[in-house]
Length: 202
Image 1 (tube, rainbow, N blue to C red):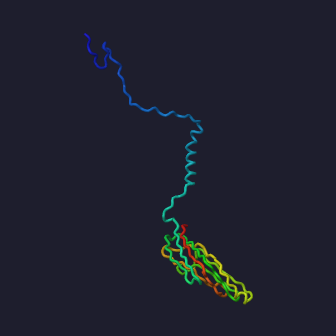
Image 2: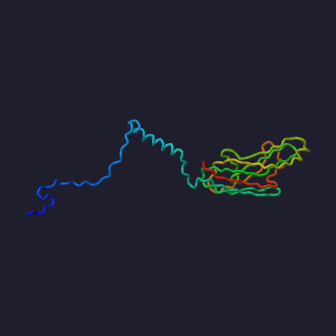
Image 3: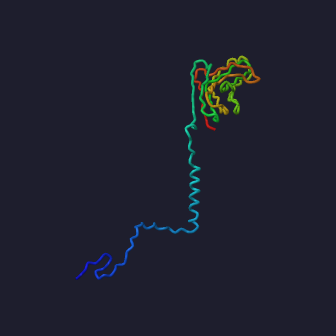
Protein backbone atom coordinates (compact mmCIF):
# COMPACT_ATOMS: atom_id res chain seq x y z
CA UNK A 1 0.00 0.00 0.00
CA UNK A 2 1.45 3.26 -1.05
CA UNK A 3 1.64 6.09 1.43
CA UNK A 4 1.55 9.72 0.57
CA UNK A 5 4.95 11.28 0.79
CA UNK A 6 5.41 13.73 3.60
CA UNK A 7 6.66 17.22 2.84
CA UNK A 8 10.38 17.13 2.20
CA UNK A 9 10.36 13.41 1.25
CA UNK A 10 10.26 11.47 -1.97
CA UNK A 11 7.70 8.71 -2.46
CA UNK A 12 10.40 6.20 -1.49
CA UNK A 13 10.95 7.97 1.80
CA UNK A 14 14.29 9.68 1.00
CA UNK A 15 14.72 13.23 2.32
CA UNK A 16 15.12 16.02 -0.25
CA UNK A 17 18.02 18.46 0.18
CA UNK A 18 16.94 21.63 1.97
CA UNK A 19 16.77 24.75 -0.28
CA UNK A 20 17.78 28.17 1.02
CA UNK A 21 15.80 31.10 -0.51
CA UNK A 22 17.91 34.24 -1.02
CA UNK A 23 16.34 37.66 -1.73
CA UNK A 24 16.43 38.69 -5.36
CA UNK A 25 18.97 41.45 -6.12
CA UNK A 26 19.71 43.20 -9.38
CA UNK A 27 23.11 42.38 -10.75
CA UNK A 28 25.65 45.17 -10.37
CA UNK A 29 26.36 47.30 -13.46
CA UNK A 30 29.42 46.33 -15.44
CA UNK A 31 32.55 48.13 -14.36
CA UNK A 32 34.78 49.84 -16.85
CA UNK A 33 38.43 49.29 -16.30
CA UNK A 34 40.46 52.50 -16.55
CA UNK A 35 44.19 52.94 -16.43
CA UNK A 36 45.45 53.63 -12.96
CA UNK A 37 46.55 57.20 -13.80
CA UNK A 38 43.23 58.31 -15.31
CA UNK A 39 41.11 56.77 -12.55
CA UNK A 40 42.95 58.77 -9.91
CA UNK A 41 42.86 62.10 -11.76
CA UNK A 42 39.18 62.19 -12.79
CA UNK A 43 37.76 63.54 -9.47
CA UNK A 44 40.38 66.29 -9.44
CA UNK A 45 39.61 67.33 -13.00
CA UNK A 46 35.90 67.44 -12.15
CA UNK A 47 36.60 69.68 -9.20
CA UNK A 48 38.62 72.04 -11.34
CA UNK A 49 35.82 72.18 -13.92
CA UNK A 50 33.25 73.04 -11.25
CA UNK A 51 35.55 75.72 -9.88
CA UNK A 52 35.90 77.33 -13.29
CA UNK A 53 32.14 77.18 -13.79
CA UNK A 54 31.52 78.95 -10.48
CA UNK A 55 33.95 81.69 -11.47
CA UNK A 56 32.06 82.25 -14.72
CA UNK A 57 28.63 82.38 -13.10
CA UNK A 58 27.49 85.90 -12.07
CA UNK A 59 27.12 86.50 -8.36
CA UNK A 60 23.51 86.73 -7.17
CA UNK A 61 22.39 90.29 -6.60
CA UNK A 62 19.76 91.46 -4.19
CA UNK A 63 17.03 93.91 -5.01
CA UNK A 64 18.82 96.62 -3.01
CA UNK A 65 21.76 96.53 -5.44
CA UNK A 66 19.63 97.49 -8.42
CA UNK A 67 20.44 101.05 -9.48
CA UNK A 68 17.88 103.74 -8.68
CA UNK A 69 17.45 106.55 -11.22
CA UNK A 70 15.49 109.79 -11.17
CA UNK A 71 15.18 112.50 -13.82
CA UNK A 72 13.81 116.02 -13.79
CA UNK A 73 13.45 117.92 -17.07
CA UNK A 74 12.25 121.45 -17.85
CA UNK A 75 11.71 123.37 -21.06
CA UNK A 76 11.88 127.15 -21.11
CA UNK A 77 11.74 129.72 -23.86
CA UNK A 78 14.17 132.06 -22.10
CA UNK A 79 16.37 130.37 -19.50
CA UNK A 80 16.24 128.13 -16.47
CA UNK A 81 16.45 130.03 -13.20
CA UNK A 82 15.90 127.12 -10.81
CA UNK A 83 16.76 123.49 -11.52
CA UNK A 84 16.95 121.18 -8.52
CA UNK A 85 15.68 117.73 -7.64
CA UNK A 86 15.16 115.82 -4.39
CA UNK A 87 16.47 112.28 -4.41
CA UNK A 88 16.02 109.51 -1.82
CA UNK A 89 19.38 107.79 -1.32
CA UNK A 90 18.95 104.22 -0.10
CA UNK A 91 22.42 103.44 1.28
CA UNK A 92 25.19 105.42 2.90
CA UNK A 93 28.03 103.49 1.20
CA UNK A 94 26.83 104.13 -2.37
CA UNK A 95 27.75 106.87 -4.83
CA UNK A 96 25.53 109.32 -6.67
CA UNK A 97 26.02 109.83 -10.39
CA UNK A 98 24.62 113.15 -11.53
CA UNK A 99 24.20 114.62 -14.99
CA UNK A 100 23.04 118.01 -16.19
CA UNK A 101 22.30 118.53 -19.87
CA UNK A 102 21.19 121.83 -21.39
CA UNK A 103 22.27 124.84 -23.40
CA UNK A 104 24.92 127.15 -21.89
CA UNK A 105 26.13 130.58 -22.96
CA UNK A 106 28.57 133.18 -21.72
CA UNK A 107 28.68 136.78 -22.90
CA UNK A 108 30.86 139.72 -21.84
CA UNK A 109 32.79 142.71 -23.19
CA UNK A 110 36.11 141.75 -21.58
CA UNK A 111 37.59 138.45 -20.45
CA UNK A 112 35.22 136.52 -18.19
CA UNK A 113 34.63 133.03 -16.80
CA UNK A 114 31.63 131.23 -15.35
CA UNK A 115 31.30 127.79 -13.81
CA UNK A 116 28.31 125.44 -13.61
CA UNK A 117 28.47 123.10 -10.62
CA UNK A 118 26.40 120.64 -8.59
CA UNK A 119 25.51 120.92 -4.92
CA UNK A 120 24.26 118.20 -2.59
CA UNK A 121 22.19 119.51 0.32
CA UNK A 122 23.63 122.96 -0.36
CA UNK A 123 27.31 121.96 -0.47
CA UNK A 124 29.60 121.05 -3.33
CA UNK A 125 30.84 117.48 -3.65
CA UNK A 126 33.96 116.66 -1.63
CA UNK A 127 34.16 112.95 -2.39
CA UNK A 128 36.47 113.25 -4.11
CA UNK A 129 36.15 116.65 -5.90
CA UNK A 130 33.52 119.15 -7.07
CA UNK A 131 31.45 118.29 -10.15
CA UNK A 132 31.72 121.29 -12.46
CA UNK A 133 32.20 122.69 -15.95
CA UNK A 134 33.45 126.13 -17.00
CA UNK A 135 33.20 128.48 -19.97
CA UNK A 136 35.89 131.07 -20.49
CA UNK A 137 35.70 133.95 -22.93
CA UNK A 138 39.02 135.59 -23.75
CA UNK A 139 39.49 139.33 -23.96
CA UNK A 140 39.28 140.65 -27.51
CA UNK A 141 37.61 143.53 -29.21
CA UNK A 142 34.90 144.89 -26.86
CA UNK A 143 32.57 145.34 -29.83
CA UNK A 144 33.13 141.75 -30.99
CA UNK A 145 32.79 140.14 -27.53
CA UNK A 146 29.59 142.00 -26.78
CA UNK A 147 27.96 140.58 -29.92
CA UNK A 148 28.98 136.93 -29.38
CA UNK A 149 25.81 135.15 -28.28
CA UNK A 150 26.28 131.44 -28.94
CA UNK A 151 24.16 128.95 -26.98
CA UNK A 152 25.53 125.39 -26.99
CA UNK A 153 24.10 122.23 -25.49
CA UNK A 154 26.60 121.05 -22.90
CA UNK A 155 26.72 118.58 -20.00
CA UNK A 156 28.07 118.51 -16.46
CA UNK A 157 28.56 115.00 -15.08
CA UNK A 158 30.34 113.17 -12.29
CA UNK A 159 30.24 110.81 -9.30
CA UNK A 160 30.01 111.93 -5.69
CA UNK A 161 30.72 109.68 -2.69
CA UNK A 162 30.39 110.18 1.03
CA UNK A 163 26.74 111.28 1.03
CA UNK A 164 24.59 109.74 3.74
CA UNK A 165 21.36 107.85 3.16
CA UNK A 166 18.07 109.72 3.07
CA UNK A 167 16.73 112.73 1.20
CA UNK A 168 19.36 114.58 -0.86
CA UNK A 169 18.66 117.94 -2.49
CA UNK A 170 20.60 118.01 -5.77
CA UNK A 171 20.89 121.31 -7.67
CA UNK A 172 22.87 122.91 -10.48
CA UNK A 173 24.24 126.41 -9.92
CA UNK A 174 26.10 129.08 -11.89
CA UNK A 175 29.00 130.91 -10.27
CA UNK A 176 32.21 132.72 -11.07
CA UNK A 177 35.66 131.29 -11.60
CA UNK A 178 38.44 132.29 -9.24
CA UNK A 179 40.49 135.33 -10.32
CA UNK A 180 38.20 136.11 -13.27
CA UNK A 181 35.35 138.62 -13.55
CA UNK A 182 31.75 137.58 -13.91
CA UNK A 183 30.07 137.49 -17.30
CA UNK A 184 26.51 137.29 -18.56
CA UNK A 185 25.70 133.58 -18.24
CA UNK A 186 22.62 131.88 -19.63
CA UNK A 187 21.35 128.37 -18.89
CA UNK A 188 18.70 126.37 -20.76
CA UNK A 189 17.62 128.94 -23.34
CA UNK A 190 14.97 127.70 -25.79
CA UNK A 191 15.68 124.00 -25.08
CA UNK A 192 15.16 121.16 -22.63
CA UNK A 193 17.30 121.15 -19.50
CA UNK A 194 17.47 118.01 -17.39
CA UNK A 195 19.05 116.58 -14.27
CA UNK A 196 19.57 112.82 -14.00
CA UNK A 197 20.47 111.28 -10.64
CA UNK A 198 21.49 107.64 -10.24
CA UNK A 199 22.54 105.75 -7.13
CA UNK A 200 25.36 103.29 -7.81
CA UNK A 201 26.70 100.57 -5.47
CA UNK A 202 30.41 100.71 -4.66
